[in-house]
Length: 313
Ligand code: C5P
Image 1 (cartoon, rainbow, N blue to C red):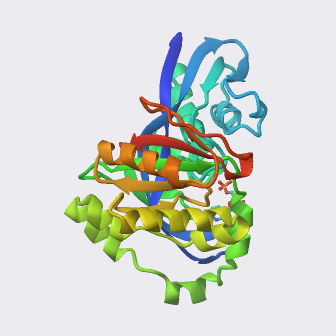
Image 2: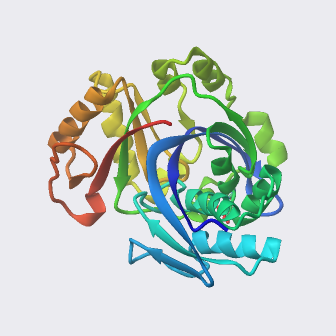
């Protein structure tokens, strides 16, 4: 058994997300393009007789409602091991935010404990186990951008030919994924398949390796229902449409089931200029987080945005 291990668990964004329709098992059939970010939680694993979890964020649960512990227990159960670990989660990715921080933590826990406990589970076995923990978990085992189908668990990895410079915009208010899907009122799969948005434009843009073309092809079927759940998101869409029309960014989209947005910029200098513009323009609070010169401004919690400069991996 290894004594200890430290791994990062990246956030993701969805460049394209179409809901093909409602399934009989209560899930929705998806086609989505997911990309991991350079921005990540950190996980520490130390060999120990007991299985315990500690977390930097006192608001997060430390029982099976935390996907880290759910993943560790699933791995123990699957392999019938009695080995334990002290796990420490240094949380940086907000949730629920549509950035799949919890799912990424779960995938990293599977990878980390597979190594710490020297279980030698194959990639296919880990993928199957990951799918029992959550729809987004298998994607993070791929370790690269991927097209995901089914409920999200059928993963086809690909290499991004270019990096995207991003500003992540996270409202303090999150959204419940089931509530957003319910508000969508997707048709049954047989009907939905006939009217689905094609992913061809995004495939072509990715092949061109052009951030501008990728920004043109961004699409998320969950954005309109999310805006109905949280009208602030409609305001954010309009704000970034204005920024785009003023040449301040290439495009923007809500990620996953929200509530975070990502804004695609030409380079890191442009993201910095966009931050300054947002501090001047947004009628609400702004918290800058991982930037050299903080330009935060106070505002009511429900209108405060946390900004992070990052890029795709
Ligand atoms: O798989 P996961 O536990 O992350 O999904 C959380 C919830 O999101 C599900 O219970 C379901 O309501 C919704 N969901 C869905 N279709 C998907 C993925 C998630 O309806 N493909």
